[in-house]
Length: 213
Image 1 (tube, rainbow, N blue to C red):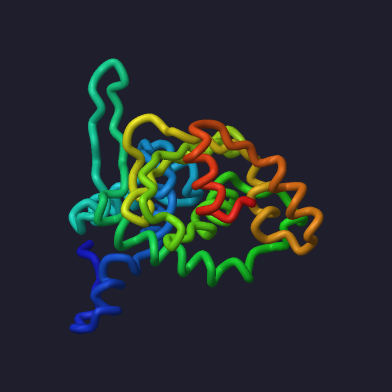
Image 2 (cartoon, rainbow, N blue to C red):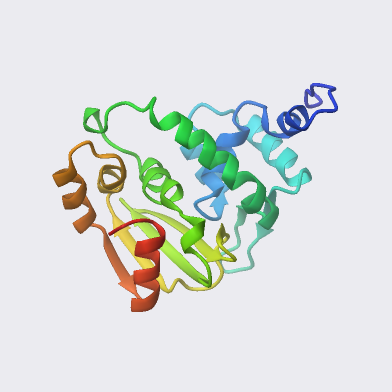
């Protein structure tokens, strides 16, 4: 079945022709955290049919937002990543939707917090491009056993390049509480439990960049 479109010469309609199908933005959300195998995406996108995931990935590749890479032996696997255009064009959209959706989240203490929500609330929504001038570094974030990687460069976030100079280790609950906790004492306690390891200058820059002080 060919993709549906609005047949309107309007920037919003044209954008929705690419991004408006079900699951599309959630696939892009998963790829913000770094390269993902097809199986990784299926595991995180509960309920998506395998043929629909394949179709959406193909559409996103054709739109230039996602890249597919076949890694050589001995790894020998296929991974999907956001293209650089994807990082530039899609990240602001995801940030805006996430900010809109924050107020609709269930209370933090009502149940477990997923690593992805920890990354979105603690890292993605904390990014302040005004504090990123002159910073060019790759960061790894370990959240409850799940790894996220990205590079800060040219005052924006981009795909990870090379080994990280800083590793942040935290629980998803602490990342969300540090950003959204209603009680100041709980926010500060959660912040103290977030661990930064790596080049001292980059650590200090990233603490400031994501307001982890």
